[in-house]
Length: 108
Image (cartoon, rainbow, N blue to C red; front, side):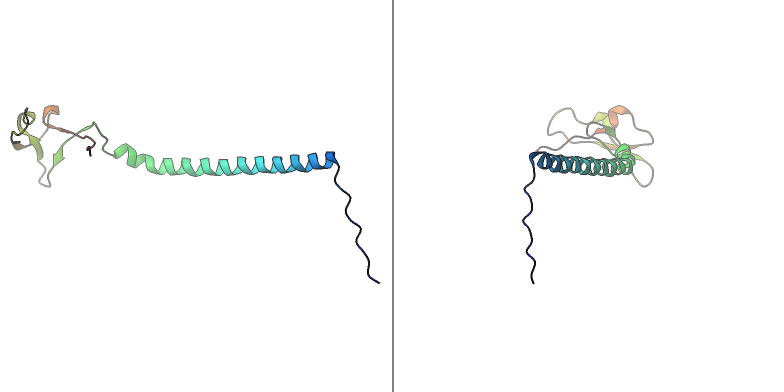
């Protein structure tokens, strides 16, 4: 003889509220755990990148170019002061601030 399953009793308002609170608590815990994992990964990546950032050339900084033979490429007298004038380059053992080059972002 087959047994018939009795239909489940409907949930009370208090039971529904309890289930909703359990779901909300679980979602909050998962969100907190995932956020902590993401922050940890970002922090680890930032630590790995920091040496490269520290050693990189940044816009607005001065720089000089040293050739394989050890001499620096310098713009004579700091370079031309007007458009369409040619640059005169020279080599130096040491470069002064007026003979160095400043990095800039190109414009399109």
